[in-house]
Image 1 (cartoon, rainbow, N blue to C red):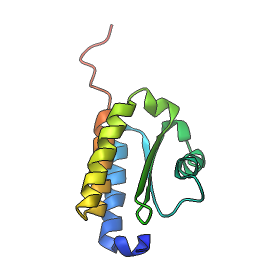
Image 2 (image 1 turned 180 degrees about the vertical axis):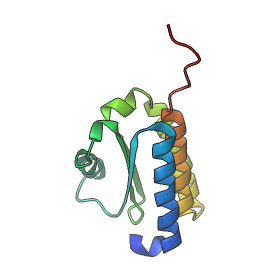
Image 3 (image 1 turned 60 degrees about the vertical axis):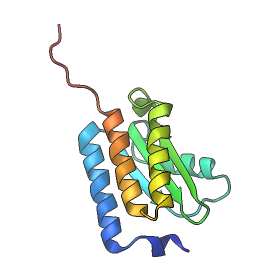
Image 4 (image 1 turned 90 degrees about the vertical axis):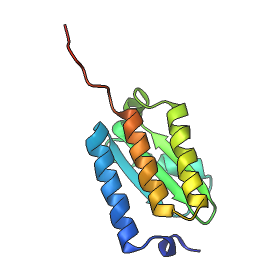
Length: 127
């Protein structure tokens, strides 16, 4: 099934809203790419990530629904707040939702989880 058949206009709007909410929540840039990869999926996702406006402060979620692939690429600044275990947990939750047929909801939930993990705790006081 082509990626375009998986997402309705309301699904796309929900994902766009999730991207905006994630960005506001933690201050990093989020992008979602749904489609096939050119060759190695990880290399393709990293190439897409490198093309973003500020890759060091960005998170790219790459989903190839036909090949059933998910890659999450984080920039250098993001990795200071978001570790591999947290990314892995979000990826697992996304894949679980995908397996249940909730493609857009899985992406939206995963984005929020990534943002929640990347958010800095509030500072109560500084010296």
